[in-house]
Image (cartoon, rainbow, N blue to C red; front, side):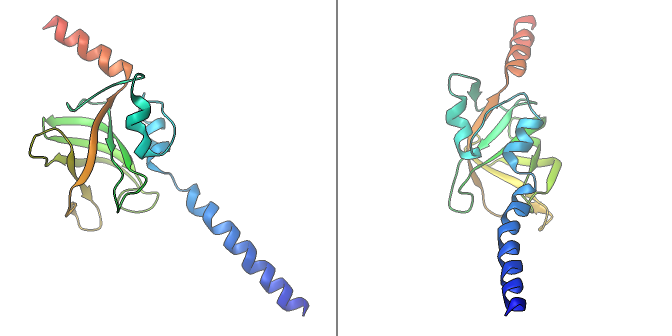
Length: 160
């Protein structure tokens, strides 16, 4: 009887501990906050709305900006990634976490605007398990620009 009670207690503790262990892996929001000057809270799906009136937002990629993905069926919490380099208007390299595998951090991976309008509303992102861009596009809102990126861009445009 005692052995069964101990076994049940161990099983219960194991179930209680597993979600905490899974959550201990880095998520995209924590990664983006730690690796950019965009300091928002909430789920990734909420960052675009939370940025309204706090940060400038737009559809032009800039290094240091956060690419905000919309929630969808396969990505109910949305996703955020930090732009590390702009290749051209439709290709960027991003740093992010929790995309290819749970908790995995990826740096310098390709994200491509595949929208018809060229507005970053549909994005394909490098997916490590296939070694290629994702097979289907993910919906995105656009870019959230930290104040330092906006101020730097304004200085560059007024100088040129």
